[in-house]
Length: 231
Image (cartoon, rainbow, N blue to C red; front, side, top):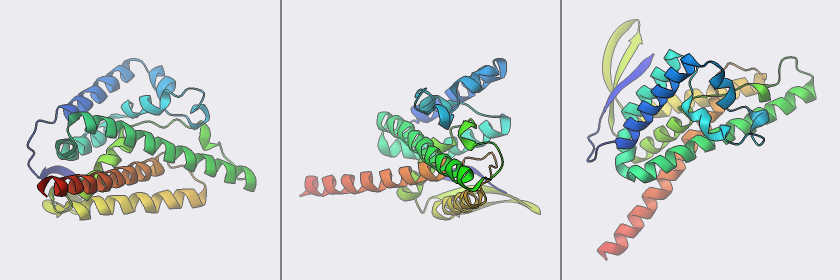
């Protein structure tokens, strides 16, 4: 297991949005513990996606347990500040929500396709379109995608738990790249076997790709405008 502790990548601005998102997610999780029905009311359910469209957004602020929210908030805390610093506070917030929507849409398409295959082949088991999905990981996957494009050589201080406990510095392209390959492998395996592990791998894949593409386009536009300005 490799756990990111912090990145060696200083910022110029205070990450107001990143810290606010962490606070909001924790506050909502505490409310969930006091009101268990809250999750069923606001999680993303593909079968209700168009009937109750608010779920496209609300699911990003829900979590299924302590480990779930701790893991997500750790990744947002480590990688979010630099991405926010690059885009600016307002743009980062809009992109964060957009990446979460892209993740949910990718999950929706994957689940609908999987459900159609199950029906066509007579595969037994409950249809995945009724399984609620929740968590900030889709939007945070967008943060990871953007980070890898913008800061591929940044060093990530990583805690390694494998026979021995140690800390190493890993370049962002290697750490995040391995994470993405992990999502691709298990997402494809789950899709091929028509199984449901309880992890929305395709949401992670969709959010990551959206974040990476956004960063590529934004980075190119910024370089173009900077060239004209200096000319």
